[in-house]
Amino acid sequence: MRRAVCPGSFDPITNGHLDIIERASKLYDVVHVAVLINKNKQGLFSVEERIALIEETCAEYSNVQVESHHGLLVDFCRERGIPAIVKGLRAVSDFDYELQMAQMNRGLTGVDTLFMPTSPTYSFLSSTLVKEVAAYGGDVSHLIPPTVHRRLVDRIAERAA
Ligand code: COD
Figure 1: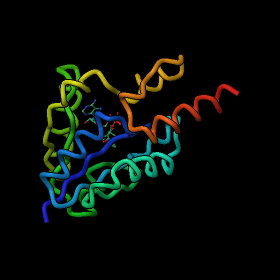
Figure 2: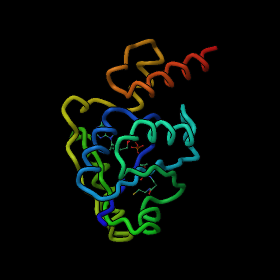
Figure 3: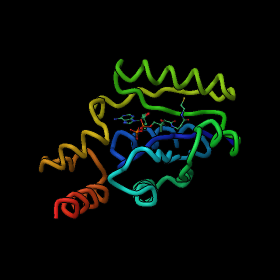
Figure 4: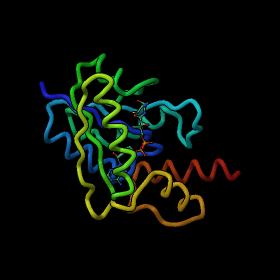
């Protein structure tokens, strides 16, 4: 079985994430989507909510499994026998940090990282920008799955109340 992991914060999942997960699901037998927990970073959505949104969005991909993990990504991979990390690369600005993480992870346990060029439509897209634009009333409906958009609009309204 060829396994890979698509890791991230996914706060929330965007069409850019989804594009990478979908393409990875065609290349690997099992794709683990790992929501990494960062206790120092308060998210807009809880980890449980992020997992539910990813599961709903990825329901059509039968070989995609969604889990959370607290700690090092390499430990997530080691515990499950996953030899490959799949990351999307948006721009040259992503490359420096992604290369550092890839080399660190390979040095720690030998796990390799494979980079997929983002689809040009999503090369500017990040969860952070989506949240910021939506918080000021901008239309982000074309950048995130419909179910995520509904939850995002509701959450922003709850926070503003
Ligand atoms: N197009 C294509 N790919 C995209 C896009 C887009 N528009 N947006 C995001 N992606 C891909 C990228 O590959 C990105 O890395 C990934 O999705 C996740 O993105 P985010 O924004 O949800 O998550 P990040 O960047 O905050 O995730 C960083 C990790 C959680 C993966 C990283 O910090 C990590 O591995 N943490 C675990 C602790 C650890 O092991 N630390 C040591 C690292 S060496």
